[in-house]
Image (cartoon, rainbow, N blue to C red; front, side):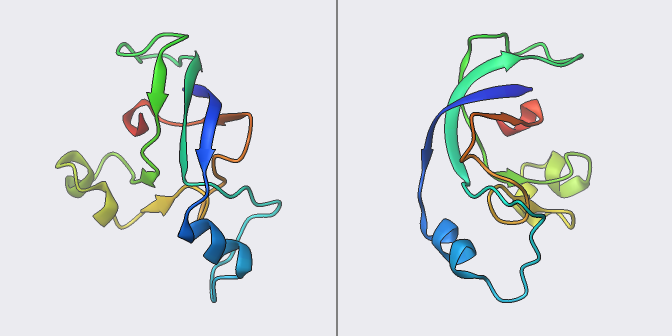
Length: 103
């Protein structure tokens, strides 16, 4: 899903990443921002619960979506866990592309 971001917040994690989190390897250029909301701009194949124009809030915890932990709602425990703005490019942008499960 392509989301046009309308709001993003600065939180402590963003400050830590900006100041240099020891051991954190970033893909450059990095985009900070874990928190965000906006509206659906485009919907991919197989997504039925959202349509363009829907207002959404983003869940910044990105699990694989396939493992037992993700399927039980514990995506923050996934072995392939990521956080927007930390291990992945985040919400300080005009648009972001995310799986529908993150909205």
